[in-house]
Length: 314
Image (cartoon, rainbow, N blue to C red):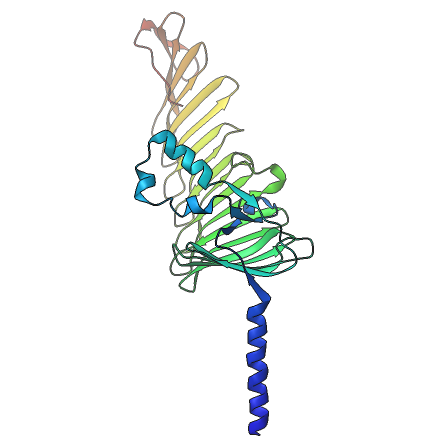
């Protein structure tokens, strides 16, 4: 029985030794180049070209350099080159990070990998396919704080608070490119898990909600509308544009209170009673700076008179 236990122990120790030998240690100057991680592009292992300068980058002598000298110094420090590794298991362990990974037959990152950032105690569990980052989880003190995933040409980034509740979700639709202005959707959440706001850079829209679920605001750059609501979901303000005319309305408990419309030639101000019924309106003529008042049916109730030019905010 003792002989059998001894054999098992020897086998386990041998396996551990082989596992340790399987991973080749790389020089401290090597690092994971994460440029393109959120764009579905293959990542590379790079090495700092002037590592001796990099080690001096935080020294007092560098801080005391003049602007031009400092710029030239950091140009050299940040210079790097791609390293071509053969198939195998590797790791590096320098003063800022530790990275354990695998390289496939094509010389690309493949399978599971582990990145530890020594500056903030973050650990990132990563998974690659032919160099492309597919998914990963960032943990701090064993708690997940970020979850990343590339699926169906959509890159998602979820952030969580200390209690594991989702705070935000950023989506990048790669088929629309990687410009933040054309391909992203930003979603924010309340602590109860409901959506707080969503900004869609693709559709050029924005919506925000109260914590009770009622709509708080909405806008559409293409349709040229911008509305806000009270906590009961009643309309408070409404801005919109039709052709070259811009309008802005104010509401009380959902009933219109006043409205202004501006075109290149005139400005019209509409006034309503507490039931939302039009009382009268004014028209300011920009050519002669005169204002005329009309009743709801369009009949003049006050002849043109000169007053300071009004202005509409937009």
